[in-house]
Length: 313
Image 1 (cartoon, rainbow, N blue to C red):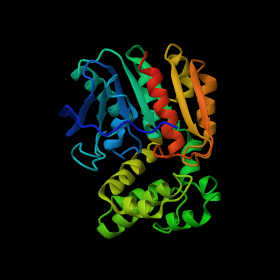
Image 2: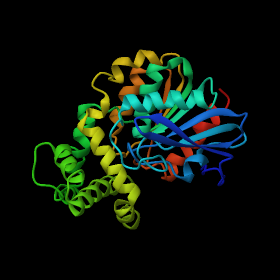
Image 3: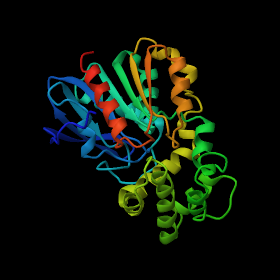
Image 4: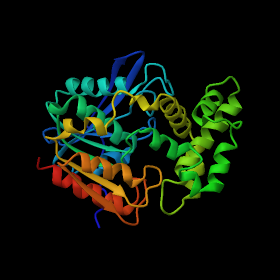
């Protein structure tokens, strides 16, 4: 079974202003003359850590990693103004032009898969290939599965009870959490953000990791992710006029590898399967014994094999 490539440090770092008061942290790693690949992290709002660099052979790839608007090392942290899917797609084009990249491979997991697909459908001529993990299509059914009472909640009723206890009973949970997270009561805002992230991280792995989930939920990064995710969920992730499956024909000339945990309950496999059926130029790998987190060994193995394959594009 393949593991991640060894640790490596960036050879170049950037802070790139992109408008609306936002500045993006970007780093370049690996071979400056290698195959350009951009890592698109999840969330939205999760940020990219050092492990993001390690899915790629540093001798064959020019590895581009950045933190999307409002999170990680991008500034200002936690800001949701001027932070939409349209903005993130425009940011990718700004990064590509700034770094003098003609065409690149996009590697995205979870929300990163959403962003990769939306960008590729807007700019298919700029994309050499797509490697996607834990596909999230942003459909109403996907949003309701994640935070509604008839989705993942039916598999984890005790976890869901903890999640919803953070807000007053409401039909629209995204609105309820948003009001708490962005309200004037700082303690309630932190509690709501922690509950949101704790719910997600508890169901993201096949084998629970209580120490990690509690620590991440209370961290600044976990709080930021909750705020930005909730902001996007209230706007249907900006996909009301960008339904990914309806525009799948725009991917026709782009090869893709879809790596999907068969036991993924954050982004269930039906989304990946529907995407594959609508996109004949894709390969679908349903990985047994794996859930949603990219750190799970079976997913790492499949993703590293996929990047090795696409290094030859």
